[in-house]
Amino acid sequence: MNIAVAMPWRPRPGREYAYDISVAHWRRALPAAPVIDVDTGDEPFNSAACRNAGVRRAARSGADVVVIADADTLVEEGPLHNAIEGAAGSGLVHLPYTEYRSLDADGSAQHRAGAALSDCSALTVPGACSGVYVTTPATWWAHGGQDERFRGWGFEDAAWEAAHTTLLGAPPVRHEGRVYALHHPPGAKEGLQYEANAALCYRYHQAASDPGAMRALVEEREASCSPPRP
Image (cartoon, rainbow, N blue to C red):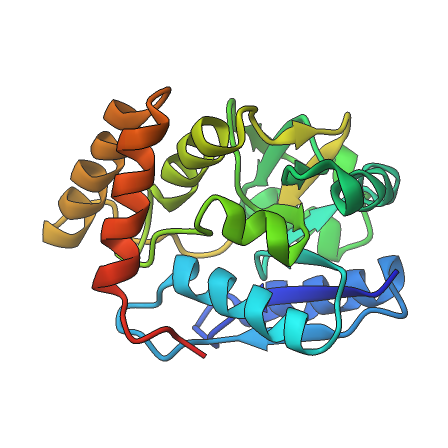
C-alpha cells in the first residue's frame, strides 16, 4: 500500500516550530511516506483548498491512502495505522482519534522540553473533526472533498463532516486514541469572512440528512471553484 502525507502549510510567525516538529513526527511514524507541503496561494490561507489539492497531488504520486495532516497536529501511531488499514477499503474517511487535545503555550513548551504529549497542559476539544484525516482519493471525492469557499479560520471541518455523513451514509470512522495540536497564534474569529464561513456552515447543517439537498450544495460549490485546481 502506498501512503502519502499531505500537509497544508504556509510559513507564518509563531508556527514554524510546530511545522518542524510535525514533519519530524510524520517521518518517524510513516518513514516510507512522502510528506507533501501544500499551499494553493489563496489569500487568506485556504485550508480546505489545500486539503483538496493535497489529495490530488498524492493521488498523482501513486498514493492509495492519503493522510491529510495539519502542520501543527501529532497523532498516536497505533490509531494512525488502524485508520490507514480501515480507510483503504471502507469507503469512509477515518479519523485516528476519539480525543482532540489542543496544547496551550505551556503545554507546547513542556513538549519541546521533552515531556510526553499525554503529560502536557492542554484543552480537550469535544466533537473535533479536523487535524488529521485518513482517506483514499476515491472516498474523498465521493462526498466532494472540502468546500473551498471557506477561507481564513473556521467551519470547513464541521461542514465537511455533515457532507460526509449525509452523502456516504455514515459519519467518519473514529479510532480510539488522541491527537495533539501544538500551540500557535490563533486565527481571527471575527469579521466578514468569519461571518460568511459561519453562514455557509449553517447551510450545510440545514442540508444534513437530505442527500439531494447536500448534493446540490456540493455541486454549487464545485461550480463556484471552476476551473478545477491543480
